[in-house]
Image (tube, rainbow, N blue to C red; front, side, top):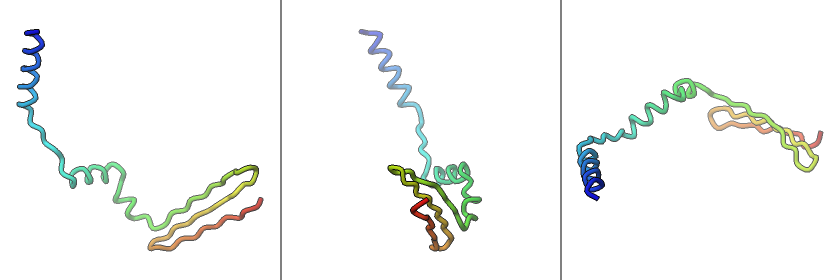
Length: 80
């Protein structure tokens, strides 16, 4: 019983002595942007995606193109 009380006190004092330093939002966002390559992503002006869905034997193909600023096109024949 004494050992558990002493261990608890030692841990409590240890945690109390530790200095906790939180990161600011700007620091977190900056490190995230560096990790994902935000400077390269900001230069992208268009994106194209394509795919197909097979639903109960019907195949739907689609192609979507997004252009900055605010222009988009969706193409997709329904029947094969």
